[in-house]
Length: 241
Length: 145
Image (cartoon, rainbow over all chains, first blue to last red; front, top):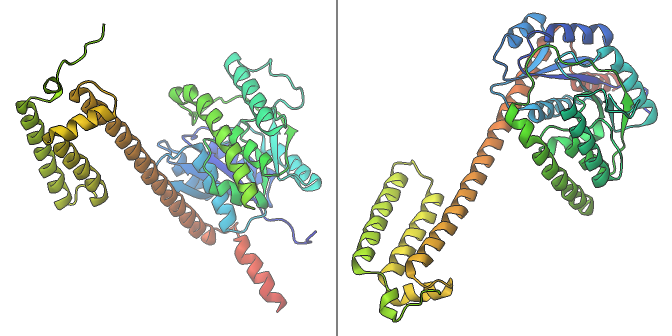
């Protein structure tokens, strides 16, 4: 193992998060002073951009809204271009506690995970405290991932992930609907080690979700189709290699 | 009971219909050519439309060809066969246009991402609390030489 300390990038995709972004950035800086921070401003229309400028945080600004998947992909491409070893993604709405990230990072390095997901459900394996719609979606996608990859992932839609450099390229090359179930299946089928680590997440109190009402209806169908395509793509890629 | 045509003459389109359809074809042909001439339609797309319009006009104008096409698609009347072919063409074109639109959208997204990355790298270089790891690694490597 190299003695050089790993270069770590914390990426926060943000879309209209003026109420929480300042606090999230401050908490990341406080809890992870040795990690670099990149906020991906995904074409925000509120004051998020101005707040980020005032904070002096490194920001990758999309000229228009490209969606969560593209925002994450921008962070991955940035990490690739700047030669980072590890990328940590967390939501800008304040749901994730940056203080928990270090434990996740340590677990990734010590156990050799390629992707480690900060999971709200793996600890209790219980979805009952979630709203009915989300509970149904979580169970559906968890089963879908198990069916497609053979591995049970309890929290497929968590925005808190730690990724090592070796997954940057496959993730930067493919387009996913939002880097959730379909990306997990794709990576597992390619032979990467994907795991979960229990975290506690707060409920969103401010800001606007990246998902519109219509996308909530389309989401299960799109994800299911992309899981299938991810499965095919991973098998083809494995054969090519 | 299904209607069966009693003679070949019944299935041929009336001359007026052929004339009207040919005139429509001619109008579309001139329109497409004009769009290409003014750079408002890509030549590649124009060729598809010109081929389709000319093909339809020739099929309409040659009764034997029209009957052949009608039998080929399993229709009783030429109008039904033409409608079926037109629907097929519309679906094909819609799919093609949407795929081209997706392609353009993807290219635009990549462009926006690259622009965002370049700008953020530029701002990162000037930021006080940030050192580009790629740059730092190169500097570390150089210091050993």
